[in-house]
Length: 433
Ligand SMILES: *Cc1c(COP(=O)(O)O)cnc(C)c1O
Image (cartoon, rainbow, N blue to C red):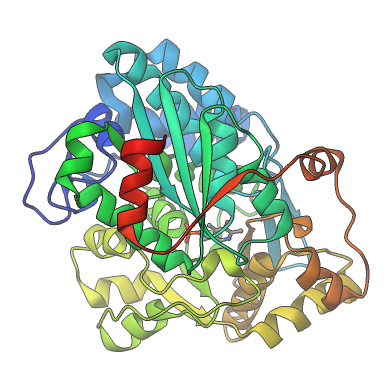
């Protein structure tokens, strides 16, 4: 498998080169040259295959010859070593719970896969790599956990001060050793802009071997396809494929799902479930992609005004607006609706959802309302405990923290404060880390 840049002005590369580089030199995102076709056998008796085996068979064509099968099997086994259950909420709506990993959000899968692939490649190269990543909350913890103590890899995480939840902050600031947290007095978009500027800086690039662990990295983006296969494996009515509602911010997760669908996985339709940061809705309505300043909401991991993976959705459908409209809808859910949905789910269905899952649920419920006979799945992307204030307020009950969270909450936060200015980031990268 080869990967080209979405800006079409860079050499094609293999999986190894794409993983190490993160972004293409022309600032485009790497995209697979062809969409592999699933072998029908895997789908026919998917229930009889283990998650490890499904994951291995899905990812293998994308990795190609860059990792030997035996090592790749071990990497995927360590990546999907926690449950991803499909839970029915009523007759038509199911929750795919992606929060049972070590940092309680779906980004664990991508971060665990990428860190192990990068560890494998660095070992061969004998060089030191610096992973630079901006987070709106969950990426930071997942990347910190996935990369902690991976030899040859230093990790620098930028996060917007005061805009991530207490658990999220602890999960990304308490590791120490090769994990460094920069607390930026700005928004997630500021953090992302600083990271992009650092990657574009020749001076930095000539002195450090930089890569990104944001969802633009193919090694983080592609394994997110697994969720959709695991969902299908557990789907009770194989003759009637599900509608999938995906809480979306940077559009990496939903785009991985759409890639899986294009490779042959039966999915009826996708819904990008967004909060008021809804540039996808605007694109679907008008055909124009207009980035906006991000607005803070209860579902803060989706407060993204310029979703970096949206270009991959466009690429997947040859930038054909009509073709995209057939497969993708978008919903805009307000904070009031999010909060009342958390409360309704808790009181009427005995289900505790986090704000992102609630956005997904309501987007799906609204979509199914006018389509009798359809059933669907929403992705519950984070554990409710990661958003205790919003969930506690909506349900009137304190959210209980699992043991694992208690342990991290006891630890000391360790971050470096920084103004949202690339010059400070540059100085830090070159002289202080
Ligand atoms: C990152 C995140 C999202 C958004 O996923 P994208 O791939 O950026 O669209 C949704 N929910 C939660 C809890 C997240 O952490």
